[in-house]
Length: 297
Image (cartoon, rainbow, N blue to C red; front, side, top):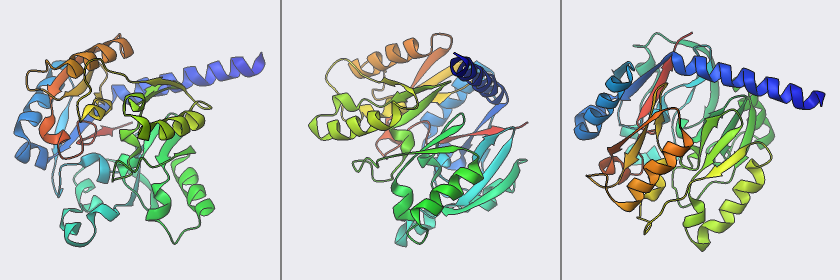
């Protein structure tokens, strides 16, 4: 009984902490979203204005996916930097590799530590006192022993690290395309149950790992599944609204409508706003990928 009470107290403390973080949120996007994806940028800004949320445009960036190269938030307005040099931006693509230090020079944030490993912010899903990453971190840091690498991450981020298998259908090794944190002990899993036989094995492995830590909810959509239906997990949550991507220009395809219904049920106390994001989605990302939360204590 005492252990159950203690667990309930921990959940309440996590929830209160999450509310505080959310209340201090300001959204940042890259200048490249404004330049190259003007329609998505305008729709996002309209949604931010509607919710009374502040936002700003990041300069000194080299591509649109702000989530990947911006620092990690620990809570209480404290941040950790890391080495952003992913393998998918090697060689001729290195010109698109943003220098993290240059971007944050213009921001008033409290950087408390540097995690001296190759990392990608899209592969980090913070879940209260836990953090989920895919095992791609091992191949990106081959010169660090796995046990030491895990220890470095856990100590620097003050977290319990939960490793999940890299979904090889997704070339970047991002955890945030697989799961999303709903708060407390609740976790959202992408619609692997609808992705065919090839996805069933990874779905089973994910449940085996994650069910031990979270109450896992799986996404599922009605209608004939469109090619990019993975995108809905790539949403933005703010204090008052949740902004989800849409695949059809009029947001009227069966999957778009079904996704909106799913998120209305998932977030009954928040307004769900859906915006057309196919120009981003066709490049392999969506709304979560192009946003980054600036939180101050």
